Length: 388
Image 1 (tube, rainbow, N blue to C red):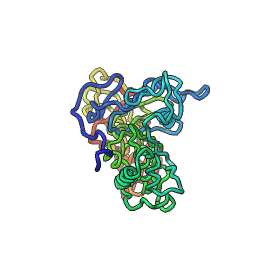
Image 2 (image 1 turned 60 degrees about the vertical axis):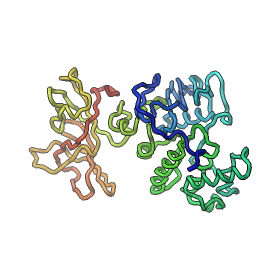
Image 3 (image 1 turned 180 degrees about the horizontal axis):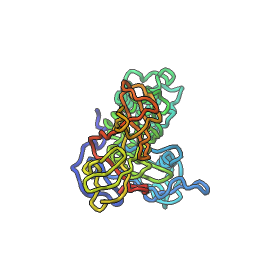
Image 4 (image 1 turned 180 degrees about the vertical axis):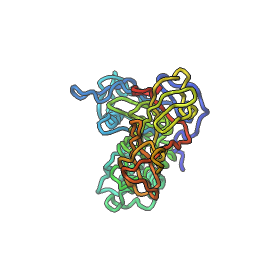
């Protein structure tokens, strides 16, 4: 690959120094330059605050995803970064240059590329002409060479003469991505880039897009409400809720150690086992759980009430003699390869269990639920929304 497509992909040595106000969870990026900084950014529409004092730093070569439900503010954040909207408060900086807050740089003065969910290709232009549309400052030979390199990067070297209506949805997306990469932007923004693709193609394309961005060394921010998509393509995930940043961390830490009940519940099925902390165990409705399994449960929590986060694959429900059961199946959802069961425990908790499709547990059947997790479990103080 030519040098003009590669940017800052070399890993740096780990560092324990975090930037001010930033927890650098992925040490591969800790010492890299900040490409984007949002500092106290707030956006209101009339009486409604859509973004509330948002702080966010994205570093060279990172692929960050803004994840959250509809209306959480993620698309508005993307528009503020692109210059398509002005913040009411706070500062936006691109490579240490202020582009909003004190001054406002319009979109054309920001080195930011955008890939929209509808791709927005020019229907009357070929794939090559679409890719080269923003390269008018180059002479014909240089533009032709760059377009050829980009089409090869996105796996479409033979499709340069094809019109958009002659391309599949995935191929159109690749052309749109190549067109956005052509001017070598400092930052690439992807707005729900896979939402218009069918399920199988969506999975294929998100893996392919990650490969392309990493090969090109581009810093990118994606927006989605699809948890699986965010977890599979991102270096870090920024989980947003009601205009606030709930957690910004690696996919593994966001899923395994959520900092709020919202994050726990939004990222997959979440159940909570009520527990009472004893000397060596946490007593729950599925039996005692070793304190060694409960992440970071300090001695000062002896005798307190907590809620232990469990996922469906952490639990198993099986038929048992009545005197050994501890719950009843109240819901069954067939998902093809797996079956999701909801069980009401005798303790009053309701939990979810995921079984192989060949396992059969009947609706309304009394069962024994056991904890089968072989990893640390997150927890929350009883009645508090955030983990400690």
